[in-house]
Length: 390
Length: 145
Image (tube, rainbow over all chains, first blue to last red; front, side, top):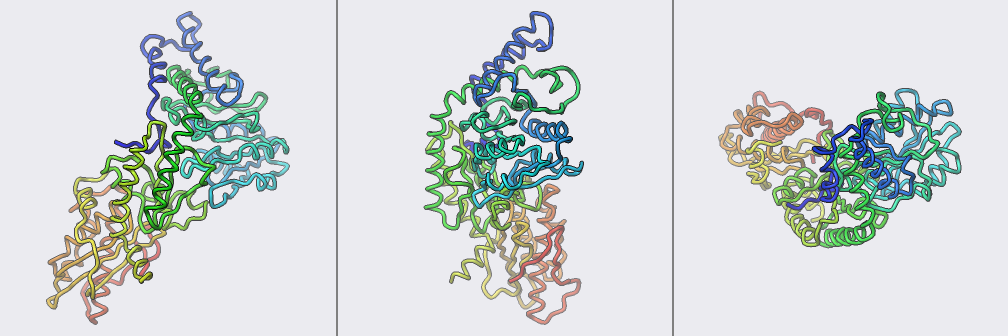
């Protein structure tokens, strides 16, 4: 099998898995316990907090554990909106945010908040100048993702953060795809809140965190016990947090080498596809791009067929086509960068990891060399196109 | 997610292609929604479907239903071909996931549209044949050359 869906989830790091192991059968204490048996759990959780804080230049006390990226995104938007409703009810997001942000913003809209959705350019880039112009006296929060999950475009976080700081508006970034993959620094980028999810960087599923800058107010999202300084109730997911901490530390230590290695394979795939397959289009920014993201649209064909034929070749990938999104519309991200529906339906995302080899990359491209002509030979759109060319 | 029959018809689609000087051609669906099916029919003087070919832009289920629909109508009279419903196509494929039922409707409509084109070209009235509909399931417009 060739696994190229690392933007969906990753294989767990063995080191992270080993770090978790004692916290299931041996050190199973509730971290809130007062007996000494709970000490190892408590210490391990605090150690993970440090491991994670270090990756983004935060203080450990600013890291709050959640059950994943979706909870972190929901909490950041709804928690800040409620805490600052007295200041204003306007928030700014971008058109290419993950559904966890888009739908949270829509939920706030229904409750009377005003939401401005910033457009993106053809590469999926949000403009810091445009945000500068969109901020109003009643704006309380700007939420722009660090890097896009579909097309991999990395946003100008430092410039956006500077604009927010200038206006005294909070800045949240959904860094689910970016954290532990590319350098992020909450001080240099003026980030007030940051969401991430363990399983996107070789940690376990079901755990994530929200970075909340000291002094930022946030209403709790989960009501209940006094965990996480009374800000996030629920029994501490000790093994999950330990695994995520270990994975974050490992990824951060290895980040520079991983970025160089993975982006070289990415660029090799992009170059081969552009050279060897006609009527394709690279989606996303060519250089301001996640190291592991390859995303193309192939004209005249639809994504699901590509995925099924890739699967038959043992290759796991994903698509933003309607058929794979469970609706009639293709991905909102591809539409936001200006692609017409029929082209957006033919998208293919192959997301790599450090484990991806050059040989696998070549095999995947080789598979496309037969899959795409095969689907085109069945396509009435291609038939019409060829007739028009004749 | 798909039955073995659907996978078989997707991996090894029957009757892909075009028919030159076809007796009837029907195209339904639109690129906006992600499915277009085109069916070519070769119909003999006894009004029997001698051959059928298809071209489909769409998901795995769209390709499989087109393939199965052509299989089901070859050798049938125009009257019997008209009776091949989307349910018959689905049954022949051992079922489709609920979100893909519209693919079978599209296949039924593509056959219907090709028969309509045949009737029109030959000035025939075929009992039960209705003009191609614009709205298949939630698909909105129809795209015809």
